[in-house]
Amino acid sequence: MSGVQAEVPELEAGVTDPALSTPAPAGLHATGAKDASPSTPAPAELDAKTLPEKYQKVYSAKAFQFSSLIPPLTWVPQYGRALRGKSTGADLEAMGLLPFSAKGDVIAGFTVGFMLVPQSLAFALLAD
Image 1 (cartoon, rainbow, N blue to C red):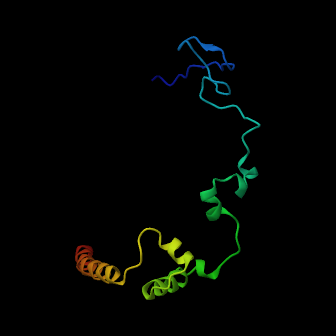
Image 2: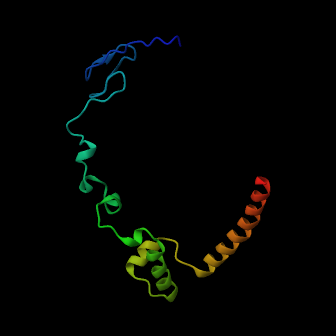
């Protein structure tokens, strides 16, 4: 392109675009810019009630909890209760579809350890 931009006229709602011979949608200009609509709330006007239900729990304002800084304070008690078979409803909800498994966690720990130690040593030799 030569750097010259062609002017695109704005279309009124329902007016036919001569280039495409199709009506322009209401609230949309030929440039693709949308009109400000009074029915669409501004971001500052959004509150927890306008969010979908599944996001309200995550994005609603709640009091600060110290355990949010150190996640093991939350999951270690849940893990212990699950291994003893005394999980609460909240524990089961936190687990989701993948239950806690000490055997699986030990296997995963050894697998990661056996892979990362040699890999770290190899990267250290490359860096030298």
